[in-house]
Image: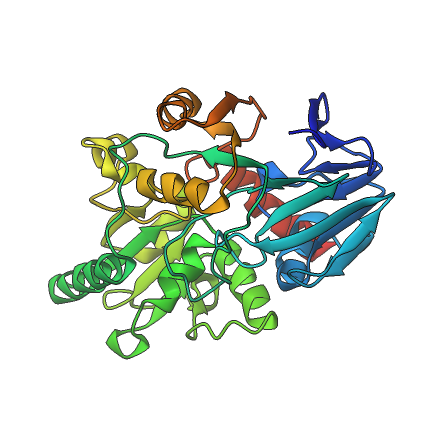
Length: 347
């Protein structure tokens, strides 16, 4: 990690005078994606992927100075050659390739290898040092094919329709909800959304992602019948009065954490679907191997287990505590996201 080091404000490149996904305001910020634990308001200027421009504005507002670049477009920052490359996490998500004095470091940000029609697929990058996340860095975390999971969601929706109750599926409002939406069949029944999900759907559509039509719950009217509907909402909506308007319903949560036995009961939902926007254990190992990196730095998640496995494979693996949260389960982050959307739209 020759070109980068951890500081109080996050991962910094002193030669290029920039921070990657800073924890607070800095002069120059390089942003991997628009989830709240990877963005900070108040920076002097930002550099980010053009693909994620519309969703990033929901975080940073209209006044932020954002330099947008295409994937693979080289940028010179005080003699450091930088470029952004697809991470496959959500719309606009990027890995950051940093080249300085012949040494290449790649910061992966959050990533997944599974197919996702809402964003560009993960691009393996050859480098000397690869900085990888490890959110699901235990061998127990292995994902089923997304097509199978989405078929299970449609079947669950159908069974609820037959029972005359709404299907409410909780999913992270940015990325996960849109991925699920792309796997639904609008001919099966009406698709409703929470306001936070609907605003991000709008921004995905502005970005050219052809999502199926959705209806905000708030626009349905007090006498709306949701018995044949599926409703997409953030996890923070579970225990709110907003749920009352839906009438009789069955609830589900889509998350990688649903792989663990008992997770569904702890989350207080009727059904769990294992669907993650992060790499599973085999995906992490595959991604690291594809880089050809001799040095691997492991951050946020199950750091220790990934470091041990990589060392057993003969790699120079080191831990790094970067302070990122987990966007799949942080309900406080969902609440901040919802509040941010409402305040930004109103002001």
